Image 1 (cartoon, rainbow, N blue to C red):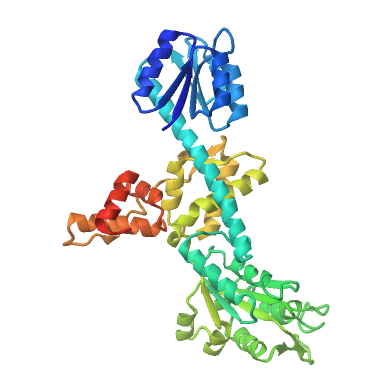
Image 2 (image 1 turned 135 degrees about the vertical axis):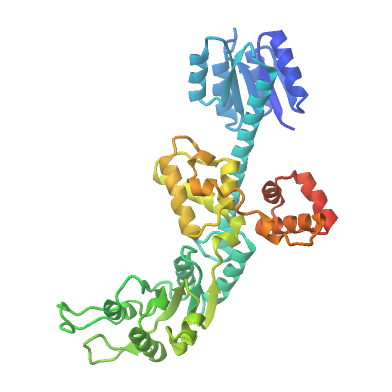
Length: 457
């Protein structure tokens, strides 16, 4: 039950406000003196403080300053007489949540102002709890697995962490598969940083960003005069990664000629620079990453089968963000903190409706797209919170994209449809009943009752 402190030296208005709000189920404490209110604020916290701006002993501004100092979560609503709006606006700049003029137009307006203040207060606490969970989760992941910069608490990500824990200490070649933007490079770096090779070099090469001729030089290096423009000897990625790890990103984009040369190095652990005559032995662990299905590339003849099996000794599949939606709030919160600090802003909150849209959006660009969008929102925001209006139009329209309508089939009864909708919502939120209830747009108690009814516990 939310607790509201009402402060007004007019006894009649104090009683009217108390009566109007108590019927809403709030616990009301009323004081006719600002000094009494300050004493009461020392004894207990309040969700909302309704205070008259002008009072003879302690005025509303003093109560506001005390509230900001004691508990930043308390929402203060200023009550101001008609004609004193400028003073009320000044109070809002100082941290008041809202103001209301008296005499009130209606008690309904008062109730609505209080409802919005409580919603804001609840959102602040929710965001702070999320930040704490975020820090605790990352500490737990780092302590358990040592994989920094990879965030997730979903079942799918815990499966990835389990694989990383097993494969990181080995010399085994690893193939990381996943859509663009899922963080395959971070997975590769985590493997290196948690291996016996972590003191040596981690060398990433993007095969899609370099032409075939240049890729050979990037991988194997060249001797002076090996080709036009080769004015000096140059070490390649294999030499630079000796004793460490070589990441081949977008490995499917290698030309057949480079694949053949690369296979020989993988098999023999030695190579020659372009234009060279002396074999160079190396000890390199190879991690490959691709957003394509390499088995299909093999079937179509675009990728060598023998190289494929050399690279995929262990395969790690990184799930797309739409398949681990329960991780989105953690990622959003982490990116908000990162970019707020980077841009010297203090944006630590995101409205529940805005968060719902972010969760419901399918994120074709995955974590990378989410990160870029949050950075843009932080840079462009003019307040201390992200609201629905701050979201791009395509994400604002994601309200219904996550609905479980695809599970409805002809011949199903209404109870079967309802059961499948609830099951899918629970599955997509990783068992988070509060978030599932929000997606289904039903009350939490109703959801608990239906979970029991349909045996979904």
